[in-house]
Structures are given as C-alpha cells and as structure tokens.
Length: 302
Image (tube, rainbow, N blue to C red; front, top):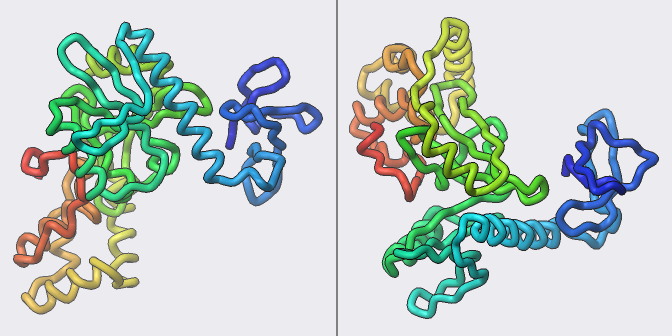
C-alpha cells in the first residue's frame, strides 16, 4: 500500500515517509513497515507475515461497507448492512432505503466473472430494486483495459464510459470516466477524487465532459509502429485475422490502416474497432471481439 497513518493520525504517502517513524494501516490500524528499494517504489507492508493478502482484502471490504453506510446516512437514507433477500438468495453489502425504492450497493473486491455479475444484477432487478456496483483495487485500470474491469463499465451522457473505485484506505471514491480506447494505443481516461457519495452524485449531475478525443499525428505514428510490431509477432487475434485476410485475398496491413479512426473509440472492443470491423467484413464471429459488458447496450456504440 502507498498510504499509512502516522502517530498524529495523518495520512502519509510512502514517498514522503520517514524510516524512523511508526506508521499504521488506515484500515486495520495494525503496525506497518516502510519498505524502500531500487526495483520497487516506496510502499508500506504489514509487519507480520501472518497477515495475508486475503485478510487485508477482508478488512478493506469491511471498511468500505462502513464508509458506504456513513455516506448513505449523510444523504438522509435509511441504511442496512448484510441484508439477506430470501427470494433471490442473495445478501447485499449495503442497502439504501429511499421513499420510493431501495438501492443495493455492492462493493466488489474479490474476483467475479461477467456471468456471475450479470446473474446478481438481474436478481436485484427482478425484485424491483436498483443496484450500484463499486469496485476494489484489483479492478482499477492501471493503464490498460481488460475483461476484468470492462465488465463494470457503465455509460452516462455527462461523463461517457465510467466506473467507480471505492478506495477504503484513503476513505474516498475515485471516479474513472471519459474512458476511451484507440487501436494500438494505451486507453485514455480521467480520474476524479470525491470525498463521499454526495460529491459523486453532484459531479455526475453537473459534469459536461463527454467527447471522443482526437488521435494526434504523433499518436498515429505510434499506432503504425505498434501495428508493424503486432504483424511481425503475428500471434493471437492478429494472426487469426492475418490468415483470414490472406484467404480472402485482402491485405491485412492496408485493411487496418484504412479502418483506423481519426478519433478514439468507445471502450467496448477487446482488441480494437479496426479488428472488429475486419472481422465483420470477413463474416467472422465478431462477438468474440467485444468485451462482456452487462450494463452496456452495444448497439448504441458500434
């Protein structure tokens, strides 16, 4: 972890920490040790080897639920934790009770498949409840989009594609929004730090930041270089499309270049929009080239 509390209960980043001082985990309040080194960035780690990653994730999850209950109460909602719904055989992390409906708030820290995510969401929907999924650290983008995080993407006309990370250690929400992708480039996105649910609701309600960024000349040159590398390496989906193009008397390289967009694309493609379009042109099963996204209607964005 990169943040810990000092003896004055102040949150300190590892890069600013002093080896001579004592620091404590902001979640479980156990003693942590500052670790430094040339190969890894400065960070804090629990002193006792018996403190497992799973134990830490459990503490993070519990701390996150407490934060959600606190923020829900501040909004004037009646809140409950670990509510069991017999009809759907599901236990919700937190429930917000509003005058006309209830909202199930799930804080997902452990691994989950798109199939299970869809199943749980549909179960809440069938009971007439609304639901919100907030994610833990394992689902953050870290510079790349994967099936693991894409399954939580939602779309809002004010902020584009987004998902919400509940950072229990820092006791805040981190909104990843304006998420976009372009072939052979790292994704683009913005991050907004928010102190609580009230700030999140207000930001989304008033934001006007939904547009697709333009691909610059420098970016286009990088795309072409990365395309050349992908062709030379010739593996996975690139290899499959190369073979399909050859069998259909098409030049793969030219097909990709012709389909490169002047703008970034919506983040729904496992590889790129160009690959998806080539697969469609070749009557290939293009669904394999889309992320499984339970909360997105693809037809609005393809």
